[in-house]
Length: 473
Image 1: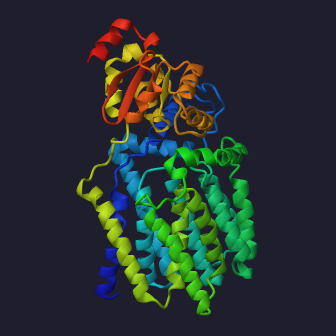
Image 2: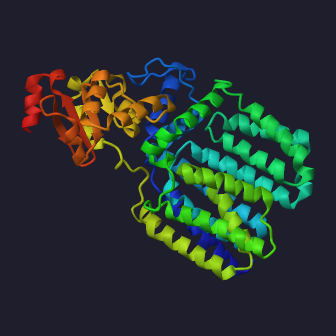
């Protein structure tokens, strides 16, 4: 290989460094760690809810139990650095697979281009989440299918394909619900790929689907996927990553541009008499539509859209290089700060100062009912244990409460009824100026604010001398 090719390869790979170096800051990670500690303490897989007072004892399908044990193992081994190292390894593996997909399509140059586009589209997702395992598994499966598209002899016999698929999906179904996208991937390539590969892929699809039942909850993991779909509109309105792509979000801009460019490149290719490959085009359309509606799915859509783009503009090298340069500049502008200020964990999104305040007054807050932000439940539960049972956290169990709280925010009157209905004694919410209008001073007192969080308490629920001391402060 020429030295210049190596230089270009590593310049492209440098775009993945911000994804690898980004700190761990996922709010849901705390409830995952809570669940793992509970598993070790009880010696069994969780089957009911134990951290809240609103859903205490409710049946719970912990379909990410294996991920939780993995992250607890990483944290136990090296603390926050262990969590970061796990995240870094998974993102590095994903980047290597994306480059491999591009190289399989048409050599090193395509691998570099696809990697750069993918890095720009993935920058806003540079986190340690259960879906990161799904991304790696999805990419590995996709690279294998893409290689088979070009090497018919590489397609294994149906029996071997079924065996390999069953092992993969049995593991996948215990890590994260992204196995559903893996089945969709396999179905698309089975239906639209080479006829010679169809028997093996159909066998792999059937075996993979059956293997998803090999988990502690059996068919119930499918029911949980349906539960997520049922509350999709609520989550889209209240949780950023479940919402649609928005040009107002800087991390969504490269994703929007990538989808638009992939569609345009396909039109250009068809006008030139080059039809896009059917499996790839179908995958990009299906996942692109899903990702545009729910931005978290762009983690799966971006690789397919990127490959469709580089294949569609095969004869327009300068166009592709210009686009890749723009993508690399975006990565540098928004991502290299993580490298300059490198740290393994970022707690700026959590109510750390409010937690310190609550810890100092722990005896007063103990066992009193709290209403907390959706994303903060795991942090509070892990920090205070049974002393403070939370209102909700990031699990699907609390989707109905998320919908109820959203409806209650329409007016201060609705909010008061909502808090009364759940007998809430105190509230931990984001530090927003608009919050005061929801808490009548005759009933509620603001006793802490720090720029991240506010703590309001119901006057009738707390000792008057204690409250007078804090309000005076």
